[in-house]
Length: 284
Image (cartoon, helix red, strand yellow):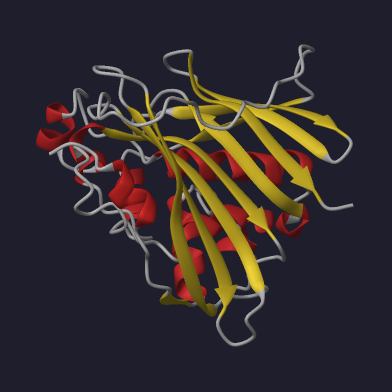
């Protein structure tokens, strides 16, 4: 079944409600590697309820819902995450009931055998106050769904990285079971846990969630250039370029120019770039 462009663009998605607590906040932090060293007091505040802090990229899971594209005609075995941007309108609370309003903002046909690009947006508010918390913008690359007759085009223009030597470099290890921990925050895609499903998608073994890699990059920013003050981050964006296998080491190179931090991530063991064109904006 091919993508039905008109149907998807006109689809109305109901506003949904989600609740998370300190437990989910700590579980997310564990899922992106915080707390690996129980004696690291600066990371302890992300995984221990005493003076609990929230990593900004938790915005991607507080209203996790992957049902939007059900019935869309997309071949989900061939779907990969292309890009992600979060905008924090205020620091996330450690616990809240939120509402999420999701829509597809654009679909581009790259051509037969070249795939399709879908752009989505989720606007998340605090249910109690109606206050805007965050906006999530995602680019989905449907590798098996090009040639459906839709408009041509591309996703957002990439952020250009500085050409000088990085101002900071941060290496963070992932655990062999990292995908199983991260999946408990919402994304149960078998691509990340089932060897047979991963093989059908063309991978030799299950891959780490792109948003888990994204969370590790945010952890590197918080650690290296924010002095463990996550509330300073107002937006965080990156483009996924290759998958990480659980157990590999993610190296994040960072550049700071005033309130803007640029970054990219490599897998050390394979010298392979996995996130490129990263951009973070800090509060003044």
